[in-house]
Length: 301
Length: 336
Figure (tube, each protein chain N blue to C red):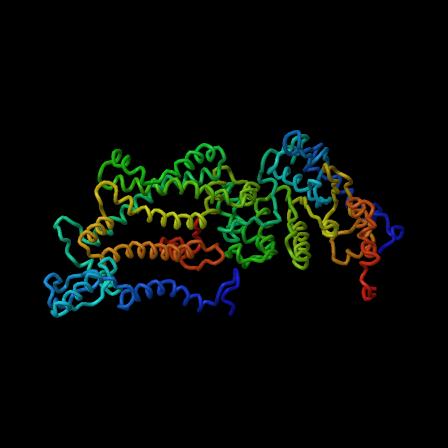
């Protein structure tokens, strides 16, 4: 285990990274969340899921939200998608108050939620078709977005014929085909196996690089959050509120080697401390079982 | 292979054999009682009167009476009555019923105004068709609306749930008074028997739709109407189809009761007449025909269903492309 004193300061940024963040902060804040709160149910017995959440997200920024379970990160993203209403505060996209779902905010769900009766192509064009965009460039659009997610050959397949990773790529293409200002992703890779997951992370970074879109990404995988994001919003639980907005001191483009970068490890350590607090002594391998119950051999050492 | 492992399917070959046995076993039991003279056969058919004055050749008598008569004749030293054991007239042998499947269709009705068997069957099918169609035209949309929108559900479902417990035949006399004596009340009985269940079943199916699919469509900018017509409707279509198959089976079971209302018609009237004439093989044939028509209808609908929804996991390709080609839509045509 890395001793704490060996870690570099996670707030220390190389000139290149510093310049990147200066540029980022100078861009317009497209999403402004102010003092947002959400209470479920009526008093008494009401539970406060979110309390006084405030943050800005800039144009073309990649932001992740992490936090312990029950910190209300899903509630937050559902409010931003318009699927849930807040009980206090405000959330504005491009200065307009968010009221209900809208095509400006694309959503990618953990459970894929593809329309099973539509082909891959039909799923991708669903948004534009519903909004009555002229038919002429829809075919081109499908080709373009499917090529972007590497599924150009699967246009006429039905969702049940695809693997989990492919389904989620269709989900991303479907959301992007609507040309949203911001893409909201609720643990999109949570149901995928580890290998598919890292492949999907690479895909997502490529897509983000080539498409004019801002991404807000929820995950419980801290490494994933660090690898993908510009900044990470750390939420505290009961009720959910902002604990810290961490800037990731890693250069782009991101590469898998950066998982071993000391700055990566220092951010990782900071997130661990923020989310778990001091690491509990019970997590030590030898602390649980003692005396009579201890298994009498030393093979594990 | 383990035949009795809970939740495990047996091999396809074994499945076929067992399914066949499901029909062969009852047939075998029926044949045994019909063709093995030592099994049951409580009556004697007289073949030779002998010395008896009452037991005429061709008559059927109780076995005890037959034995008594023979005992009497033996005491008087007269020739005994000869006979063979037979079953009652209401249990014809399989081959007789099998023959009736053909002869019932070609035998002219005894009264000149009576319909032929095929006319009776066709009449029955028409009654079911109209009853089920009318019920579906109102029941399916109402069910979908109930499943989709809570206020509509709260407005209709409690009352429908209440009416559902009233047996449809109880409305027979009312139906005659309201819609007259011809096919109206019969169609009404089928309608009543189907409609109320249909609304509730379809509403439940609609409620079972994965809500996250609706949410996904919302975030893609679908309007309220589009959520209903372009998402909820295609989303439940395969389940709705399965519901309709089951409901059609229920409608089928109301047929006989419906046809008894007012003047007897259709296959029911045929069954009644034949049993009056004591031609029981025709009665059996007619009952089995009702079952067979229902079974074949279900098999056809099932086969159709597996091709109708190519997005279902175990669907077979073909039908949609075929229909699309017929109507000149090319391969882009989609069922939604």
